[in-house]
Each structure stands twice: as structure tokens, then as C-alpha cells.
Image (cartoon, rainbow over all chains, first blue to last red; front, side, top):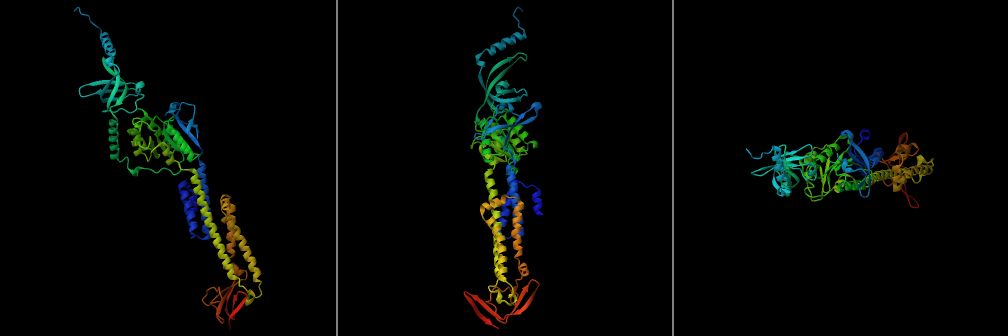
Amino acid sequence: MEKKSSAKAKPSFEKALEELEKIAERLEDGSLGLEESIAEFERGTRLARYCREKLDEAERRIEILQKGENGSVEKRAVRVKPDTGEIDDDDDMQGSLL
Amino acid sequence: MNERSYSVSEITRMLKKSIEDNPEFTGVWVKGEISNLTYHSSGHIYFTLKDEQAVLSSAFFKYANKNLRFRMEEGMSVLALGSLTVYERRGSYQFIVTQIRLEGVGELLKRIERLKKKLLDEGAFDPSRKRAKPFLPRRIGVVTSPTGAAIRDIIKVAMRRFPNIEIVLAPAKVQGADAAESIVRALDELNRPAHGIDLIICGRGGGSFEDLMPFNEEPVVRAVLASRVPVISAVGHQIDHPLSDDAADYAAPTPSAAAEIAVPVKSELVEEIEYLSIRASSALASRLSGLGERLDAIAALRCFRNPREIVAMRELSLVDLEQRMTMALKEGISAGRQRLLSLPDLYRLWKTEARSRRSRLELARGAVDKLSPKGVLRRGYSLVTDARGRVIKTVKTIKSGESIGVMVADGSMGCTVNTVQREVRGGKEIIGKG
């Protein structure tokens, strides 16, 4: 039961990591039966995979908001220099103030 | 009535000339208190400078006030630099201001204190109002100048910690009279759910006390308080502590520090996951290996050293059976155990498909099932118990003539012990005879 609900209702990264830690602890204290141990281990495997996926989910993207035509706000992706964090953009950015 | 008369225009023009050409009225500093203040939509600021005895109508035009670093307020004591002009159409004179200074920082501090007290009384800074930031933010919004040092520092630190970070910059003016308004607009924009922002950093790099004033302005403080998304305030250096710090959910000493608060270190999280995974699989491995040892113990229990001496089993080639059984078991268990116990293999095991991992575990589990006492009995072994039903593991407690029980797969027998022999190194010692 618990297995099903936790797999379906996508937990937050933090919750999933906490759960994985609890599983490692439960397996280590050795109080579970063999069947349960294997079930917990498999749940841990799924949680670890889920956490890794969460970390890789985002794509590096730096965007700047600017006023578009007719007062709407648009997003524009910009390049940055990773070592300095400088925005590598030709446009006059003061002009992009909202 | 021979005297010369002037038209209204003429006399006004003369007055204008005499005032505007008088160097005493040009480029002068006037000290006074602001009243009747109007920030006009055109960008011009109109107000009256006054003291106890007189008033001076003043105008601070857009071209001149764009460098003003604070927002003017009623009752503020200022020094205004400007020149007197005459506005002919109205028949009035006006002080055209080119620059305004606060009479002192003390004036600003007093204003901040007043606002702070008001907000404190409202409970706006209560710790209970603070929201927790997301542990792993999905997308971070930043309110600051697009050209300042703050955005560079934030991007640099955030990308170092989490290379695939998503940042949305809402560019804002962070100093000057219209900065507050610009910051409020940017905060409101980032709060729109469409942007998917779950954490906002709002701030700027270091500057003079007046430069940081927008972050003490009531509209900015209120916008931070009203933000749906948790806010980290990041203004100036360590020593600066504007009201936006009090209003925000987190106050960072600098923009770089804000990025550190906002963004976890990805490699540390990856390590944490691996560490927990290895702990889980090691624990399972040692559990399997523990079960294996118990199996070995059960197997040994079944195997009497001299099976031929036992009447009931005389005809069976027990040694052969035992060897075949234990070999099969050991192979099954140790294959699983070895894989699990060697760490690089564990790691690989973790990474392979869940299916193959499961089937390997099933294999080990199957071996375990085979070893349950019942299974062993089915293969021709028997279980011997004493009169009280306890499994006999040693001949030491058994005497000749004693009643014992023998359990086989399909039933049990009551027997009497004829002889008891103990195996010692190199031979047998008869310790009892019936």
C-alpha cells in the first residue's frame, strides 16, 4: 500500500532523500524479514533513481525578462560566461528594465 | 497722466529679466522643508520648500531628478540647488531645482526608524511569517540590475554549485528615486505563477547609504512581504541591513551568499544518494550472507559424521547427498553474496536494470527456501528430538535407553537409544550401551 502511494504521488526531492536514508537505516538494523528487506531495497533503488532524475531535470538556462510590444513581458535566454557569471549579450540591458 | 505705462507682459518680462539675470538667484542652495509634494506622471516633481515664515514654489524636472538617489517625502529637510525663474503666464516665480541633498543621513535614518516601528507594530517582521525555501529550487528568480556586480556574482556562484541551474532575471533599477517602483514591478512579475519561480533573490551590490535606500522604501518592503514566492534579501555588504532584510524570508549578507543559500551543491547531493544506496545494498548483502551461514549450520546439523551407524539411514549414501546439497546451496548463495559484497560490483549491481537485480535475488531466495527443515526432510533426512521435543545436536546429553523422537518428511517415530557413540579425533568413544 505504502509502496504504491509513494511511487505515485511524486514526493519532493527532500522527502525522497529522507525516505532513502530511512530505508538504509531499516536495512542496517536488520529487524526486517528477508522478503521485507528485499522489498525495501527495491523501493530504495527506485527512490535513488528518482532523486538522480530530479537533479538532472533542469537544464542550464539563464533568462532575462523584458518588456515586449504592447506592454507584455517576454523571456529571452542569454548566454553567460560561467567563470565570471557575466551576461554575454549585445543588447542594451538597461533598456530591458521592466 | 504723462507717465509711461507698461503692458502686463512688458512688466513681467522686466521682472523676469531682473530676477533671472541676477547671479544671486542663480545656482543657489536653499534650505527648507518639503511640502505639497507631487510626483507627476510626466516624471517631473513639484513641491514647496518652506520654513517658518515663507514658502517657495519649486519644480524638479525629469532631466534633473533622474539622478536623485532617494524618494522625496513630505516634511523632509533638504538642501536644494537651483535658480529662480519667473513663469509669465501665471505671474509667479518658481525655484527650478537641479539637485537635492538630504540635510543629513540622520534624516534618512529617522525615516527608516519610523517605518520600521510601524511595520513592527503591524507584526510584519514576525518570525512566524517566514516561509521555508525549497530544498531543491526548480527555478530561481532574481531582482537586481542587469548590469551590476550582483547578478554576475549570483550566476557565477549558482552555476558553480549546480551546473544545470535555471535563473530568471527580472531587471530592475536598484538606485535612484524610481528604483523602488522598478523593484516592486520586478517582484510582482516574478510572482506570476506562469514563470514557475519557486525562490526569489532580491538585492544589489554594495553602495553608499543613499544607494541602498530603495531597499528601505515602504513599497519595496511591502512587496517583499506580499511575495507569494519565498524571498532572500541580498543587499550590499555584510554591514548593510536594510528593511528588506527584515521583511524577507531569508537575509543574506551579500548577493554571493544569497546564491549559496538558494542553491544546493549538486555533487554533494549525488554523493549523498550514492552513499545511501551503497549503505542499503551492503545491508542487504550482509543479511543474505547471514542467512547463508544459518543454512550452512542447518546443513551441518543434518549430517551425522557416520551415517551408516544410524540404523534408519543405514542404506542411504548420505555423504553424497550432503555434498550435493551443500554444493548447490553454497553456489547459489555465494554467487549472490560475492556480487553484493564487493563494492564496485555492488555499485554496478545498483545501476543495472531492476529486473536482472530482482532475478538474482530470487535465485538467492530460492536457495534459502530449499534449506528450510521441511525441504531437507523431503530429501531423506530426519530430525531427531529428545523426550522434551528439543532437537538433539549432540550425543553428550543422550543416554542409552532414552526415548527419542525421529521426524521424517511424512511423519514421526518414537525410538529407544541402543548405543551412544561420540566421535572424537581419530575414532569413536563408546560412552554408553543399552
